[in-house]
Image (cartoon, rainbow, N blue to C red; front, side):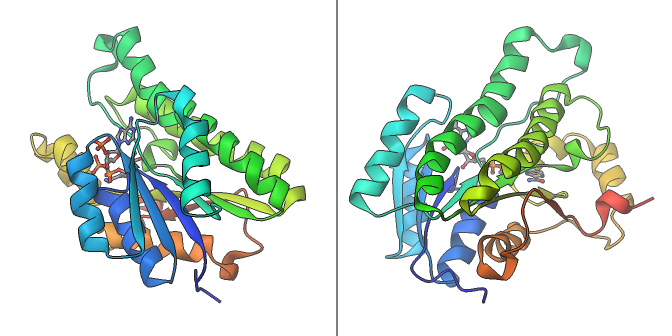
Length: 249
Ligand code: NDP
């Protein structure tokens, strides 16, 4: 029921952090995965450790004009994409009044515009085939207010809105779309946001009832579930995987 045997998953930003953990879990569940990112050496290392069911393509999701070619390349050379995981994302921590329009646009372009463009490209093929699963990676920043991340918060709220809107468009075609909202997960991104800011780190931990930060594999396991037949009646949802952070006092 939770097997991903014979499935092909495209995972953006799969060379590190949460994306790499999703790739690991999906391979363990039987899938083939294609990971993307901008740094070829990171992707090569990732594929070497993921094994024979992993492939990589160097791709910058923000170059929207290349996304159609990316999907065509994968489908022509590896196979039809059954699962899309929109994981690639960037963050920037800066007081809101100091954020320039350029910085704001850069985050929105990566975390929201590119996510929609790649989703549309994959979904046009999935809806024609009448099967497919799409996962978004949201954030606690879409659940409650966090200071100094205005663009990131706006982008993740946008992703949550897309999940609901696109579930309406895609459901008649047997394509499901859901979000995972990770809590505070130990990756390079979290390290950057927290290492110089112990007050923020303690605040995040204090409101996490389980009392510790998550590991990337916690997100990988949830991604397998949502991509599997075990979640066949779940669409348009956002699943917090956060040790209770989103409901913590
Ligand atoms: P990392 O910084 O560890 O990984 C981000 C990945 O995205 C990298 O592999 C990077 O590869 C890739 N990436 C970034 N920009 C692009 C781009 N333009 N094109 C293609 N790939 C890109 O972060 P995490 O693993 O922590 O984050 C993954 C997702 O999880 C993000 O969407 C993030 O917002 C979300 N998240 C993380 C949380 C956490 O606590 N860690 C909490 C909530 C959400 P490369 O640099 O080679 O391009």
